Every structure is written in structure tokens, then in C-alpha cells.
Amino acid sequence: MTALDPPALASSNALHHRPYVFYLAALGSAGFAVQIMSVAVGWQVYDLTRNPLDLGFVGLAQFLPALLLVLVTGLIADKFNRRLIIALCLLVEVACALGLLVFTLSDFRHVWPIFVILVGFGTARAFMNPAADALAPNLLPKTALAHGISLNSMTWQITTITGPVAGGLLYGISGEVAYGVSMCLMALAIFCVVLIGRVPQLNHAQETSLATLLAGFKFIKSEKIVLGAISLDLFAVLLGGAVALLPIYARDILEVGPWGLGLLRAGPGIGAIIMAIWLSKFPIKDHAGVILFLFVAGFGFCTIVFGLSKSVPLSIAALALMGACDMVSVYVRETLMQLWTPDAVRGRVNAVNRVFIGASNELGEFRAGVVAAWIGAVAAVAIGGAGTMAVAFLWSRWFPELRTARTLSGKS
Image (tube, rainbow, N blue to C red; front, side):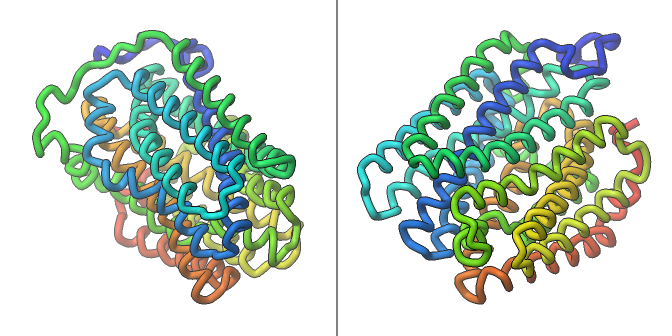
């Protein structure tokens, strides 16, 4: 037990720990705001330009800061107060939402100001995410960490269900309303972060050197299970991501409008929350590695089904199954990574992990936009799903340590 570990006899139910409850509320409020903004920005950009490539640039603008600052953001999360970092980053996100609100009110027809604002938003997220990921283990005993990670994922998925629907409805009223609500939710998240209170945290990175900057990469390289889990997510979602192209499906293929776009965006979250509830009742106790690879392959297969579908119910069902498969992947990967990573490098490891997640999501959106501009949205999504299935097969061969992982209990 480290100095940061709560008492061994503390409850294994994460909700019995008051600071964690406020932390979870902050994540939920901020996540809901981000989902509303994502739907509004995607629809607004495509409505202004009708160019799939611009949807790719939406993702790229948010990903590049995390990539360029990866050596700094993780070190800051290990060296400074993680709760303060989260609060400051949320303040920047409020400013970005205000910027989008002002842009919408101005009726300016060029999209470059949106990309500038998204770079600022991505920079805030680049600093906030490693700090937020690393803070959770400081708020919970190890016995409650798996439950906390499950609740984190469930909360995030709830926001992916309700946030896009709300975003579509709010943007259907006006862009100003959508961005205004996002600002209020981010302000609420700041209030919840303040209520977390003081969190004991050792200063693990007293000296800034090349060695301390690269410690996260060194640890990941040395732990094949962590390396395999992070890189699996990178390439699987990088190829299989279809979210960026949903405005095209909503407007041109399925013809369901902004409200329908919200439903499509909510589809993965619906499946994920059902799976999260299942996992909270029936956690994975054995063969975790095999289950991980099977569900990543399932994610790819469902992506192909969605890409080829021209039926709204089938499309939503395929998206829901994609979300369920992804939930299992997140549950296994994040639990393994947090339990196998010591607190001394947790911020830097989480910074690298967030770059990989950003690459799989935002850079994946850029990939999808470029390929869709080249060969069309349907082919881009279907080929990407096939690529994800191939990644699951190859990684199961290249990372036998991950495939043969049995339980989610960390090192013995």
C-alpha cells in the first residue's frame, strides 16, 4: 500500500467514496457538454461547406494538441495538483464554447474560426484528460478501482446516449442554444471539481529531464500487456471509426436531419450502457484477453454492417452493437492499464494513452473524412470495419501476453 492508498478495509463500492462521487459528476457534466458541442460543430461545419474533408479536419484540430504536447501534459499531471489542472482546463473549455457561440451569432460563413477554436479546445483536453485519468486511482482504494472504472465508462456512455440527442434537438432550435447549454454544463463541472476537496498527491517528478519526460513511453514499452492494449485501441478505432461521417449519413444517405443525427450519435452509447450495466452485475472474471479480442473483432463486423445499411433501424442497431463491443474493450483495457501502472508514472502513461485514444478517435475522424472524400462514405466505413477485424487478428498473434491475460487483477 502506498501513501496515497485509502484504508484497505474501505468499501469496494466506488460510490461510497464522496470525493469520487463529485469527480464522477464532473466527468458526466463535462462529457455531456462535449457531446452537445460535437454534434453542433459537426452539423454546422458540414452545413457550411458540404465537404467530408472538413469533417476530418474537425477531428484533426482536436487531436494535434494532444500529440504535440504529449511529453508535457503527462509530466504536468504527475508534478502538479491534478484537481487544479482539471478546473483550469474546464475554464478554457468554457471560453471555447463561448467562442463558438459568438461565431454562430456573427453569421460568419467561413469555417476557419471554428478550427482555431477547436485547437484551443483540444489543447485544454490534452492537459485535462491525463490529469483526470490519473486522479481516479487517488480517490479510490484498489478494491474499488475496477468498479470506479466501470462507472466512469458507464457515465461516459450515458453522455454519449443523451448528449448527441440533446445536441441534435438543441441545434435544431439554434446553434446558440446548443453552445450556451454546453457552457453552463462545463461551469457545473468546475463546481463539482471544487467540491472534490483536497486530494493527497505525491510530487513524483521533482526534476524535469529527458528521462522524466520519456518515462511514460519507457514504461509502456516495457509492459507488453499495456503496450498491446493501448496500440490495439489505436489501430482498431483508427480504422473502424465512423462517427465523423454520421452527418453525411444523416443528411445524404438516411435523410433523417439533425434530430436523426442525434439518434445515430446516441446509438453506440445505447449499446455501451446496456453492456456496462451487464458488466457491473457480471464482471469479467476469466479469459479477459480472449474476450477483448473477440469483441474488438465484433466492433469491426458491426461497423461493416452500419456502413452498408440504408435502413435507419438497422443502422441504429449496428451502431448500438458497435458501442456494446467497444464497452467491453474499454472495460478490459482501462482496468488492466490502471492496475498495472504505478502512480509515479500514471500521469505520463495516461498522457500517452490519451494520445493513442485521440489518434484512434480524432485522427480516425480525419482518416474517415479523407477516405470518404476519395471513395465515398459507404466504402470508407465498410473498408475501415474490415481493417478493424484484421487488427484484432494480428494483435492476438503479436501480443500473446495480452491474449492470454486471464483476470483483471493486475500484478500478483
